[in-house]
Picture 1 (cartoon, one colour):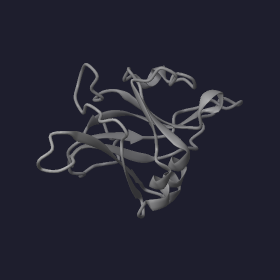
Picture 2: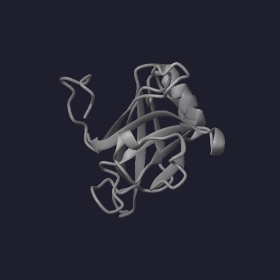
Picture 3: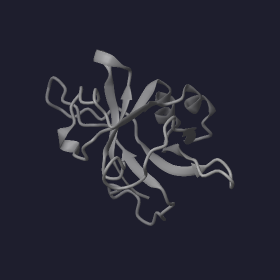
Length: 157
């Protein structure tokens, strides 16, 4: 699930999506590898020990600070499917879940890690409305001019 570049990596709990730039055809048919390389980790958080309500925290981890800088203009889009071969430029108009990455995330990131609370608690489960096994895209911009800058599948961490 991690693309072979995480040998020896220990599980941390929660869910993870290894986000990589989607293959995009150029006019010469070559693959464009410009985009964001990062891991997106989802964890449930509880407000305090007396509260039963939970929220979801998103942690972006990147090898390079440049990848985190791109987050300030981005949306996270979780699709109904889990099929990377179905990716296309405009398929985020009817997502299962979507949220804008908080502008403060890129500004307050420490090194190669940025943390934000997701506006809506996500079910970190399989099936139904759960997000395990779903395709997730990092999208820059909105509307007609929006572009996928990274994509992956959400799995167990």
